[in-house]
Image (cartoon, rainbow over all chains, first blue to last red; front, side, top):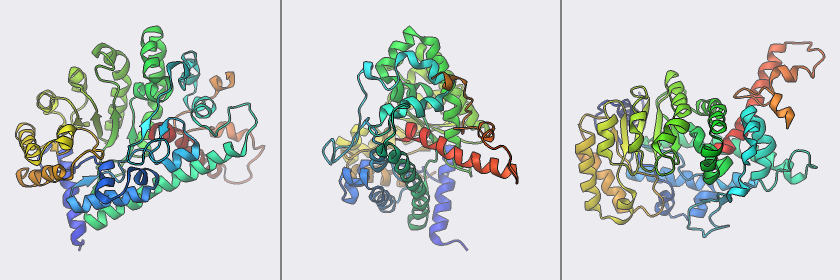
Length: 398
Length: 56
C-alpha cells in the first residue's frame, strides 16, 4: 500500500501530465517557476542559493511544502557558481563577488569585437562543433583553460578535474532532490533535460546578439549551416537528460527568437527550421517540449502551430494569453500568463482577478497549468504567490 | 585547425572508438567490452563540454 505522501505524488503527477497532454485533469495543476523568490522566502540571500546549491535545494523544498504546489523545479536558480568558478567562466557576474549578495546573477556579453567566436570561424564550428568547443571556445570563456598549443598549467588542468567533479556532484544531487520532494511533500519534479534553440545558443555563447545580427545579413548561409551543425548535438543533450518515463517535458529556454530580436521573416528562415526539427525529433521519441516563450511570440504563432499536436506545452510570458489560446489552444497545453509585474507590484486581489480571467478564458476545457509569465525572482511578493495558489486551488476545480 | 575539419565527431562523442582503436596493436580479450566502456566514458567528456555551453 503506497504511503499517503506517495498517493499525493501520484495524484499530482496524473494531474500535471493530464494537463500537459491538453486534457482535463481533476483541477488545474499549479507549477510555479520560482527562482530567487525561494531564497527570500526561506531566509537566504541570493548569494547563498547561488553559491551553495544545498541551500537552493532546501529553499525549493520549503516552498514546495509550504505552498503545497503540484510541481516545482528542483533548483530554478540558474548556474551554480561553484562550478562556474571551478572552470573560471568569464561571462557571469556572481552575487556576493561581482555584484551585491542580494542581486541575481548577471550574464555579461562581451563587446562585438571580443565575441567568444569570431565572424571568420563559422567553418570551424560547422565542421566540428565539439572540437571547436574544446579547442577554441573553452579557452576563451575560461580564465583558467590554456589555449591549444600553449604550455599547460596546473590551473588549466585543475579546471577540468574540478569542473568535471563539480558537475557530477551537482547533477547527481538533483536525483536526491527529486526523491526528497516526492517523499517529503509529494511534489513532482516539473521538468527534465535542457534544450536551447540553435540560433539562441549561437547568439548567447558564440557570436553575441550584435554579432549574430550582423551575420544574418553578411553571411546568412553560414548562420544557417551553423544552426544545422549544432542541432543534432542539442538534440542529443536534450535526450540525455530527459525523463525516461516520458512524463515530464524537456524545457527549451527561449529568449532571442521572437520580435523585436528577430523579424518574423528571420524567424522563419534562421530560427525555425532547426528548432522545429529538434522538437519533432523529441516528440517522435515520446518527449514533450516545454516551450518557454520568454518575451512576446504572438507574431510567429502560425509557425509554432505547425508542430505536432501535444508535442509542446506553450508557456506564455508577455503575450496575450487569450490570443495564444485562440491560435494554438486546440493543439497544445498552455501554462503561465500571469504577469510578473503583477506578482511583484500588484495586490492579492489583483492577482486573483487576473487568475480568474485566465482560468475563465483559457482553462475551461483543461490543458492549462497555473504559473506566472516568467521565472519569479526575489521581487515576487509572498502574498501574491499565496493568492495565485489558493485561488487556483479553489476556483480551478473541474 | 585543419585537423579539426577532418575529425568525425558524431553527437555524444569526443574521440570515436574507431580512432581510439588504432592505438591498440591487439586486444587480447573482449573488444566489444573495451569499446562499450570507452564510448560510455568518452560520452561523459562530451556531456561536460556541451553542458558547460548550455547549462552554465
